[in-house]
Image (tube, rainbow, N blue to C red; front, side, top):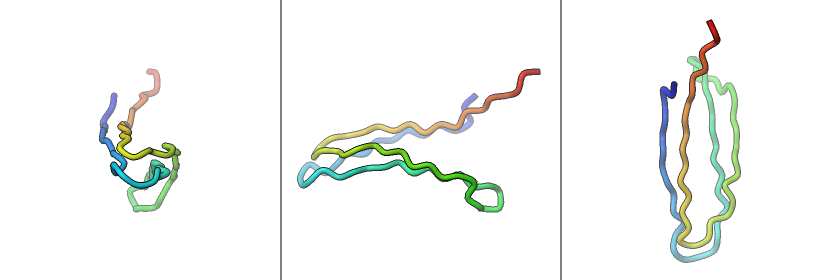
Length: 64
């Protein structure tokens, strides 16, 4: 089961130098305290290059 799924894309500007991109994921509890943070390197995007991202929260129920 996937209760949350978000997909989006970014495109680097058509001119200029390559930029380095990262994805940062932060998970907070019901009190707003950060439980974990993960940074995933995307790499450098060249002018005009695009990357698509999918973020999903999946549920794994314990066996009965």
